[in-house]
Length: 377
Image (spheres, helix red, strand yellow):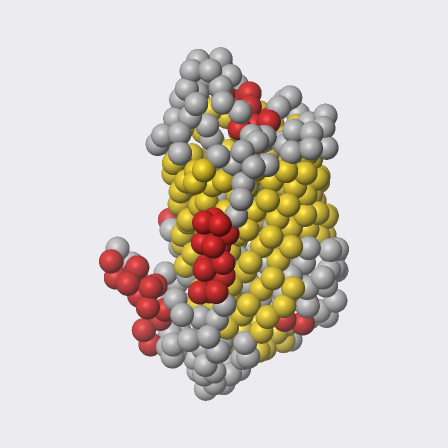
């Protein structure tokens, strides 16, 4: 849900007229994900952190980690967003491949400052990591983005009505339109676009090193109260188009730590803390912070050996200042969902993210629907 200062744009607002987008890629992407899950061969080789353990620590009920979802608010995503991870690190010559799809639906209209985000995105990520040995791994994240009017308005209406949430004025606005207008404090246009777009996002490289031996494997040993930790270094490359905010047009660098603990047999807690240094965007009006501190807190309940339910919140300061308190709030979102083991070495997740959810969510898309698969071999 989204509270807006004014539901209808004023005549002076630079909001473009309604534009219907072509059929989005959401259905095609979800179909591809299901096809991969159903058909892809998986080698039943278990990585270091997912080995079966004795009943003393976990009884074969193993944590699957946080949901790999960050806040895809449209001025947040051009910069480096460290993906939520647990403390595990792949063993030598072991691999992890993931296919993730985030579908955020944005709705925020603030005519006083000419700020409008009313569109949907489909953000597809292909991730691969390889264990280097010695508690180290190296990975890459490749994003591809579609931006359009989407088809989720009906689902969001049903969701808000079913749980008696406010719709934020969605019912007063045209459906399936693409309007993206952002200005800086001085009124300069950062982006003003009303067309469907697609393109490559910024590629991210990540190096991780375990600080406690074998990462999450230690959480399934004889003492489930042990804490695992790993350090991470990330590099974002400017491969996305900064004119449409598919990227920042600059190189970002980040350092962080991931911690996992298992205070009870069926409970795991995962935390991430990262510091990001952002390069200067080549979008000349995109006046943004040079450094960010990112945090993620995730609580996982392992229902059985195959299914885990997860709730999490992630936070970072507003990357871009508009001079208006509401749009300059912290980028904080609340996500809940579940992991499900499909077969040895393969699992999938489904999650939903909300904004304005008490203190755990502030500035975020109206609703974010995410799904993905993970293969270990």
